Length: 285
Ligand code: OGA
Ligand code: MN
Image (cartoon, rainbow, N blue to C red; front, side, top):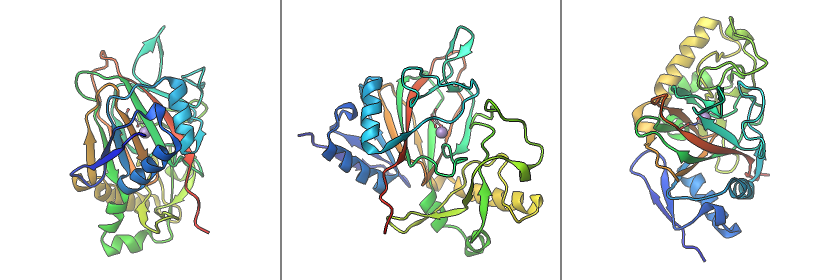
């Protein structure tokens, strides 16, 4: 029997999970971790060792995996395991071996340009640069709750378009064209605030700021509303910052947090393997 311990951060979200190697987790452990994820929104596990097979097998115990979105290269970075997304700046034979390069990844949630975005992500650090590349997570329940009533009213019943054409590093995905009018941004429309069907709590659901648009408003009105929401949602009081070590695994609730990444020295190596868990919520009857 493993003895899992959960220890909450002194922050708006996040907890460390210790006493377990994720690659060896049994069904009971997975239930404990799911509950901890619902309670804390971001989980940090240190000193993990897993093969890619174990990463996929363990992630699958949480729920069905989503295949990564179209990357700038146009084919999976991990040929053997297409369900693994490689997040890396490393170049092999002059070609990127992974997504997102070494620049900043702006605040976003993953793959929300889909109608049914992943519920959670698992990100496993294999190589980490000596400095930079920290990742930040913001609690969108707390952000919604702290919204002024005027903004809660302003977003009630409104949706936003979540841009499918660019990734969070600002790079055009293969098969898309540059956008000149945000009213024509391709991507799913989601309500600006979303209710978790299990706990009934509302969270802001913003996706990513660039090329977003609120249908029904003029472009100027939409930009003004989105700018206000983004400035509010990314305030430090809602944020946990993670400084990575090799062997760290982070699991986050993709529908309840936003995340961003600092840039780092492009000549250093950073490499992570990620899975996307499509869904494990049983929708309330
Ligand atoms: C991601 C992502 C951040 C990072 O994997 O979805 O945004 O720290 N990564 O590389
Ligand atoms: Mn991301």
